[in-house]
Image (cartoon, rainbow, N blue to C red; front, side, top):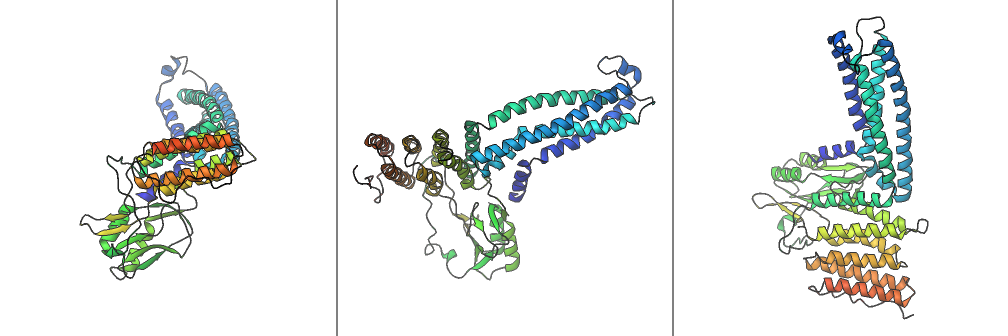
Length: 455
C-alpha cells in the first residue's frame, strides 16, 4: 500500500497524468457523439437553432477551433515553463514538485490538449461525410462548448499564475503541505503529558542484544517511505526483530546497511531480506509523504534564500518563520510515535527511528538563525515564534529544545547587532519566551548570557 501511495504521488505531481486522462476522455467523446448524430433524425436536429448546422459549416467551425486550440496549448505550456523557471530561481529548485502538483495548471493543459485532440478527430470524420446523409450536429456543438469552457479555464489560469508567483502565496502553499505532513505523521493529540522518545537502551531490550544479520540497501537514493505494516508482518512471520537504520528522508547508498535482523539465523533469511527491501520505497528525490524534514526544508529554503545578499528580502523570511512556528505549535501538541513497535502478543518486532521534536526544530530554525544574525526583524520574529510554540509545549524535553534554540538566537544577535538598543529589544523578546516556559526549568547547559564582549 505504501508503494502504491508513493506511485500515486508521482502521478499526481506530474504534468502528463491529468492531461492524459482528459485526452482519453476526449477520444471516447469523439467516437461517441458521431454515433448519436447518426441515430438522431435530421428533422429533430433542425428543430433547434443551436443544433442545426451543415457539413461545410461544421467543418469550418471545428477546423477553426482545432487550430486555435493547438496555438493556445503552446501558449499555456510556455506560461507554465516560465512560471516554473522564475519561481524556482527565486524560491529554490526543490519547490518544482509543489508547482508541478498544481491542479489548475494540469487541468488547463489537459483541457486545451483534449479539445485539440477532439477537434482533430471530429474534423477527419466530417471530411468523410461530405455529400452524405449524416450531419454532425451534436459533434460540432460539443466542440463549441469545449472551446467556451477552455476559454473560461484559460482566464482563471492566468489569474492563478499571477497569484502563484507572489511570495505570500508560495509560503502559504508550502506551509499547507507542512501542516498536511504533520496531520499524516502525528495524527493524535495529547490529553496528558506524553512520554519522551528515548534512544534505544540495548541493555533494557534483550531482543536487540546479540548478533544481528544486516540487510543491505538495494540501490542509491532517498528513503521516501517505509511500509511499517508490511514490516510488522514480515517480523511476525520470521519471528524476528527488525531494527531500522534509516528513516524517510535519509540518503542511502548501494551496499550499505538498511536494517538489522535479530536473531540472524531464524527463518528463510534470503526471503526475509528480500521482503524487507521491498518494504522500503527508495527514489531519486525526497517527498513529504512520510518525510517531515522534506516539508520543513522547503519552507526553510525559502527563508534562507530570502536572507541571502542577492535577494535581501527579510519580509518573506518573516512569513516563513510565522508558518513554521504555527506548525511547530501543532506538532508540540501531538503524540509522538514510540520507536519500539510490538505485535499483539507484546513481542518487540520493529525498532524505528522517528524524528524527534528537537531534530525537527533544528532543521527549521538552525539554517535561518545562521543567516539572520544581523537582522533585528528576523531575530525578533524567531523569538516571537518560539514564544508561540512555547504556549503549546507540554513536555520538558520539548521545552529544553526551545530554551537552547532561544539561547543560540540571542547569542547570534549579540554578535550580529551593533546597536545596544537592538540587543535590548532581543532581550525583551527572550523574556517573553521565558515567561511562556515558566513552568519549566532551563536545562543546565543554558544560561542566556551574552558570549560577546561589551560594546
